[in-house]
Length: 236
Image (cartoon, rainbow, N blue to C red; front, side, top):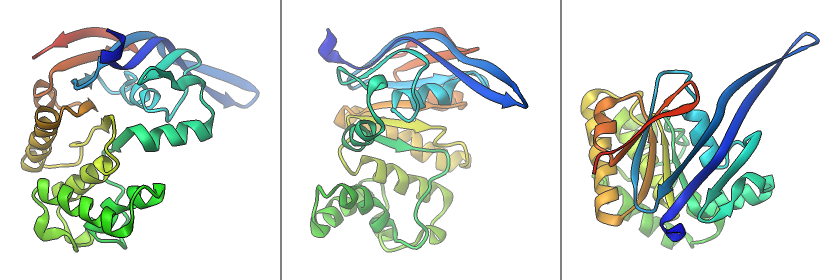
């Protein structure tokens, strides 16, 4: 059913044009790709370096636009939105977690998580702090609320980044190599956190990863090769 689909790509093509002197060099990153992500699904996008995984995630999140084809989020075509409309859509419906946590160094963990809520004006300072404390407590950082990023380990910083991404109750959580800079123990904490989020709250999650163990913890693996959907496996 259409209502069960949260993300839909229809014949999406993405090219990169680089100017070299007077010549334009066009590289096709995604020649033609189509698939759907259902609400509540936990999916991994895998593939070798340069296969188009991150580009695909950015298109799904409205951070980039296709050269042709259509991208839908929650039954709205985001590929035809203006930059202003895209910014509003991202704030309202998406949470992003990157390989690098991008926490603001001068602010504490709880303040970093409060930022998205305050930026949108959706919560008072007290309301934002209450939700930030709840999120950080849920991921085992209740004793680190007032710690600055440089007082936290890499794994703890990434958990704060996940809490920040969840602050505005996103429909979809998009993560780009969220364990790429972590040791195996810290990465395992992030795996478990994503699995818990999906199983307990039905959070829709799409993760780009090179980590086969992480991918195996999800419910579906979409393998990308040379910008095309090479395989699509349901695990659960």
